[in-house]
Image (cartoon, rainbow, N blue to C red):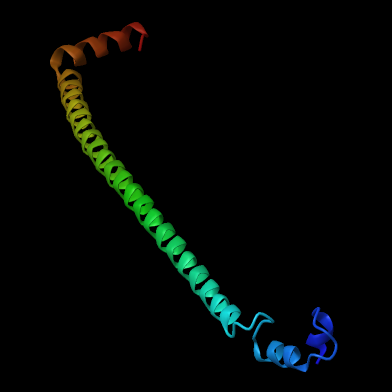
Length: 124
């Protein structure tokens, strides 16, 4: 009943009130606003679903790009690790060579004789 007071219908027009309560407009087209109301949420849901799908595709593309970058970074770090390991082994071999050379020098007769002379003269 309140719908009749809110609308600009003549006060004695009970048919307009009943049509308004039944979902009809004063123009006589029944169900037009209900159909538009049903289409609007469907279009809105379709728009949301499309936006969500676009967002998911963008996120998947970004994730693939990040994964590719990380794989390249891992490969670069693995190469760097192999190079560092090779350099470590080379340096270790050089140190071992130097140790062998020093032990040969310190074990030689000339070194021992020179050390004995230095001790006699008070030098170290």
